[in-house]
Image (tube, rainbow, N blue to C red; front, side, top):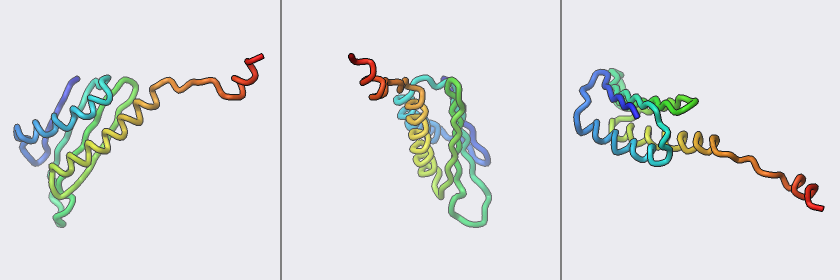
Length: 113
């Protein structure tokens, strides 16, 4: 898994990097076929105080790219909310990949003599 963590208008400290890594472990625990992860942490220069800190992640899995973004007052809470969204989308993607083909009850009744 290739991981890129970058900051826009902010320096990515080792504490932020470690926080993102621990949060990403939850996603990789659900789905281990992750090819590439790109995380972008941004501080926007908005006049209002809320939603200045943004976190974005692009997760490349086999056959699909999953993009999630979240903004909040605090960067750590933005990362938390982002990982919650990402986790839901990864679980949904994994559920779609699983083989859900089963015999319908009509065919089951028709095949039994």
